[in-house]
Image (cartoon, rainbow, N blue to C red; front, top):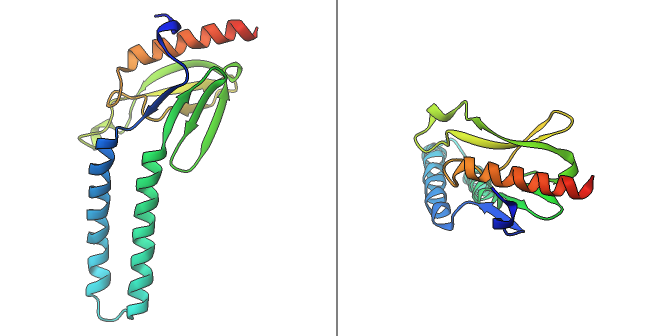
Length: 157
């Protein structure tokens, strides 16, 4: 597969329609966590308020983090933005891209069966968010990424 059919920069991220459902689920679960806190009469109202703010703040952090997470492929390399951490991988740092099975796929109904990783020359793997079988056709995207890697590796050698 040629890298020419792949426009740069290219971004992999969650669909905005999925974020709404995810946010609803997280907020519903947070209210389930808040219920015992608010029904217990031994906690002071200030403790209940602080606990509520902490739980809702954490939920908001998770929702915003999931919405911002992305894999961005550029002419310079691959940028990976997770929920907390950001990484930049230059093309020269990447040995290959590989599809691997998700060992926890059996845990959840909506869990991807395969993830995509960028393998670095030092042996470390970096998971590429949203380059999985729930969001893209993994084999096609791995082939595109490998074609881009070959193209850019040839330009830098």
